[in-house]
Image 1 (cartoon, helix red, strand yellow):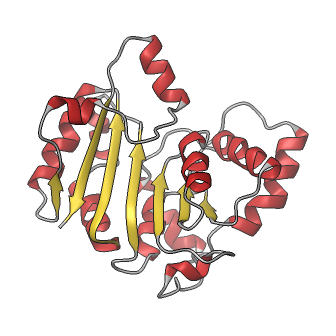
Image 2 (image 1 turned 90 degrees about the vertical axis):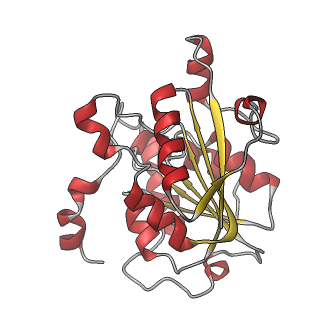
Image 3 (image 1 turned 120 degrees about the vertical axis):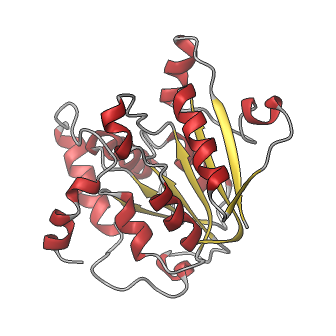
Length: 233
């Protein structure tokens, strides 16, 4: 995809600001060194078998959209060395934080992208992912901004296309209105089934959940998080 189509699609971006505090010289140097090596090249066709993206043999591939500071992504990639992980984060400071951690502890089963996640979703082959994680996304609380919420019928169509049957879409948020929004959209979509039998199922963190900085803020502010899992039928 050339730069021109990307500019035309800029209005579809579901993220907010791209930059926080200016990166320190060491952060910039680490980013400039590591990101080109790990960044997906969307100008080239995606391999039919996504396992070819990684420098080590992997048995399946998962995607995390908006990984923040990378706490969960790094935890999972280290916990499952035989799985490949793609992490997308447009926020420069979040990407820099993850890359700094990778400089200290490299992971060969991880690839990255630093722009809109929909570009990655449209690039991926059909039925190529084992799971998609979307944790603590921007809730866009004002009604006029709801169209920028990542969970939408159009993006669920994208998820349905790239997830394998039996793959999981996991969503976590501390914003009740966005949790309800996600439940309604997923339950209306023919490709997804919500796997929960009681409130304990969706108020219990995922197995080996490491927590994130956003979750820590929610806990400090006494907001209860929800952890939803949807199965691709």
